[in-house]
Image (cartoon, rainbow, N blue to C red; front, side, top):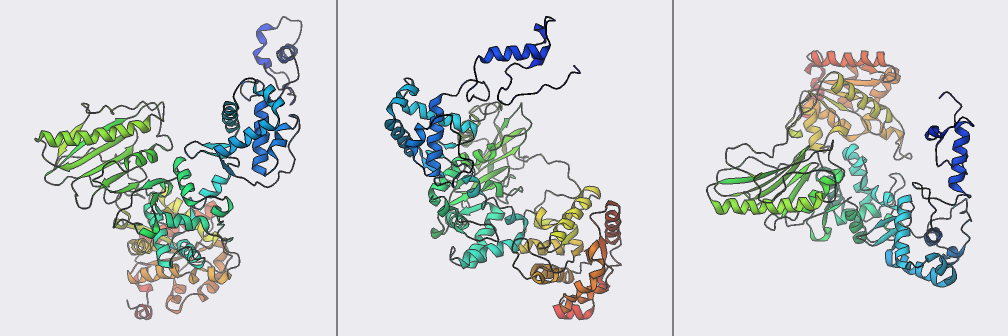
Length: 622
């Protein structure tokens, strides 16, 4: 040790590192000299392109497959590309991609044609291996390098794998949840203007169902993927990548981005012209749906199985979604389903005593089948056990694709099954973590809050200050705080509930500013008092007699008069309330402002109802 760092020649990467050669030193040379000699002997000649892991030569025929696929992707002569000398480097500036994906049969046909065009090269380099097997091996190798991606169920080869990210982007748009109703309104308006939806109300309702229930009808999927708008960064990916919505859905299902949902009369999204409904897992709520009822009624029995996992710290990605997909059509008598992030329930609104439920609570997957019956009735118990056996069998097929989970409890009809009747505690009650003061397991619309924070999401300063305050008030002060981007439900109903059920309402006032999503907007339209929902929140607070505390960024401390000049007449009285300025860029000053907010919360009577003048109440009919 202590010697100079070993330098590496990029054209001759070491096979045997010098620190592994110490045992062979005989005193006649240095470790570095011995390492160099061993590497030179191991190579014996200049290296060709090598397998990254084994430093073995890549067969020439696979390099020719690479050139053919690149030519096919770029719309060039594939036969000519096949015959190019292997040492030729690719052009520094890549041409635009012409073919992003192709059917495996089309790729095979191009490959066969290239081989047929150059039989001498083909005979020499195939070395007795069939053209079909050589292509299979080459695709697997190139997929390992990341050059291509294969979708075996859809029989597609993705020559430009990044196109899939562009397709998923509109569906995984975080703004749908984080920006609340303003963004839904903007999207619904755009879809309506471009005639991608029958009307605004339909589009808004579908978007709301997507955010709240992860339900995505084919009509909305087609519309989102056909939308063109520079300000919202939407591109018509169906046209750009030349693929039908049906083929794309099959591809997304294969790659576990979507899974099918059943459509029945009365179910959201079941209108005939909306097409099939899919579930988008990343939009699923973390809260259990109201249909997820584990308490049994009189005359109802249940059978439960616990699937226990070991040897992992958490469930692997895709396990929950694949389980949802395999269980969704489990029972013909249970046509409807509601899923949440960690499980779901299959049910029938007519036969309400018959249900199947499942939920993941690491390290256990809990399965339960419910039905009308009596535990003393052997036939009823056998029927439940048979239904549970089918659930276990389907889960087993999923777990077979995840080696190393070491699951126990999937033996059909085994002694692990637990039966219970009315009045007995359910096993399918997920263990709850200790409840932090800022959180609750109760449904959102049944909760109360210490503080609600209102702000214009078109102001970057307001967004950052709101999230900084949220983090401090919840983590440092253990307060329950309502902030739209932290809520599962961001609907107008949820906002009104949040205001009316908070002890105080913090209004972060900001003035005219650019809209990051639409720079052409008039800046004054982005000010706090210009945003309809910001004004509504203030009005809800007045109606519910919730004290309002105005907040400003430190740099706006001298602009309070200008900010208030934009307020509607019935809200100008807020100018008479003591503002609190908060500086998020100075930790000590930030904590001063935050402590002032805490004091206002603790002595909110001084904010109190006296800040609402009679004129304001008369104007709003309070």
